[in-house]
Each structure stands twice: as structure tokens, then as C-alpha cells.
Length: 89
Image 1 (tube, helix red, strand yellow):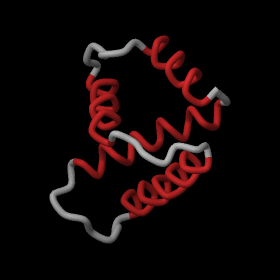
Image 2: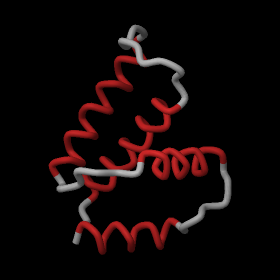
Image 3: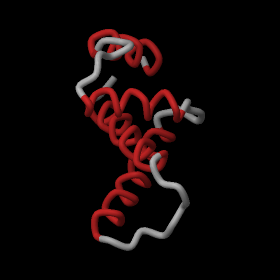
């Protein structure tokens, strides 16, 4: 899997975890909200173009939170790359 696809997936995880923390959907107002939303649009478009049309948003959000919290990962980084390479080819 190419580096762009990897970055798209990571970025998509960022967006999903941010969205899961919001009680309500709202129009981005601050600069960081706008940048984050724009990143989400870019990443989601790229991931969809890679052929991924469904995703378990809860699993993505959990993985993202675990990485940033420094928690033990349910699937190692190495195994994660193997899973992604097997799926995307």
C-alpha cells in the first residue's frame, strides 16, 4: 500500500475520533475546526477513492485514541500494516 493511502487512513481516523467526541454536529467556526473538517473531507475522499466504501468508525476511533493516549494496541503497528497491505494490495 502506498504512503498516500496510509496517510489517508490515519487522517480519517483523526477526523472520526474528533467527531465521536462532539455531542452535536456543528458548522466549523474556528480556524482549527475548519482545518480539521477540510482534512476530513480530503481524507475521506481519498480513502473512498482507494475503494473503501464502508468502515467501522468505532474501531478507527478506538485505535486513534489508543495511539495518542499511549495505550497498548490491540493490533501492533506492524500487524496493522500487514492487515492494510493484505486488504488494499
